[in-house]
Length: 471
Image 1 (cartoon, rainbow, N blue to C red):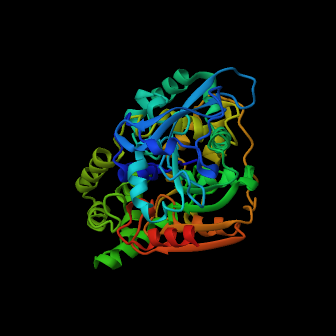
Image 2 (image 1 turned 120 degrees about the vertical axis):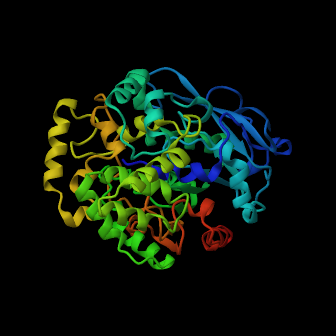
């Protein structure tokens, strides 16, 4: 489930998160007031939000802790403490707006001040809620080798030893960090907040969580904002939407900047020459957060196609240094691996497939992929991406069922928001998801890359969110 690839960086670059920061809403938010109130239903696990106090580094918000079962099925004992942050409008007439960050692996609480700034025009009508999904933030799953190899990327290629060390460190409890577990956590959060329904605003992996929650609990959703949309079954581990979309995106950016080469043809020539398609896709997906016009990319690819790869290597190093490097508290690669391997369906099936048969199934898939499916890359690019490789050797485990591919969303208003320069979750995925909504609005923002609400210079996407939420 190629998680949010550099799209994992999607919010990362946007949020400038300080590791360990605990934010939330004003002390005045402690009063209970109907749909937006913090529940005072006692301090037993899962019954309410405990330890409520002004956030240490953002006292205009209130922080607290939601305690949830490690295993919502009740078989394995243990609990997890999830940090929660809320803004101060406890009497918000439209109730609570839960903003879901990306990854999987990003925390929510450290971002509440920035997200509140982006959503300020609607916060008289909604109370903003954010939380650290299980295995993120202050309780991030720690896999140092994998973190070093991948940082905030889900396409970077990790070392086999890093994968083995991570799987050993997490052990059998890794199976309790799937999207299904996070969905159950959100419903516990809803109950703790005293809400009948939530409005959900998800970005990147957050769109998967939002849709999965809506499918599991349709009566408890008021409306959905889906920004940089990924399919609810999880990201395609072969990335067969992003591969051909690269040509469209690079050529559009080239026209906008007046470049005189064909970056898609040069990319194809570079991949043929060097066999480095996975590394290029990872770097381009990260670079969109630096420059959605991909301004230096056409020249770099043109030189590389001609046999001069020095600038391309410098480009790889730039993206790794400026975008991908990140600690687990900002984006946990341990959580990322656990979630992706539990959620995704791979060429070999699920992670319940015996490890020893997976490589052969992957090789057979590579042989069957066509140039039409993968150009301007090659089939080896599709089968050589980081998240897929992590799960290729991940220990066998039972996995939760995925929702059927054509599951219709509940009949609530849905805004689908994308950028035409988004390589992480190209808008082709958005249009596929829109088919499953009854009451949808689609907004594609010109010149915007991944994470439109947080990063786009063009304000049209944010305005569309305000208009949608206040409609």
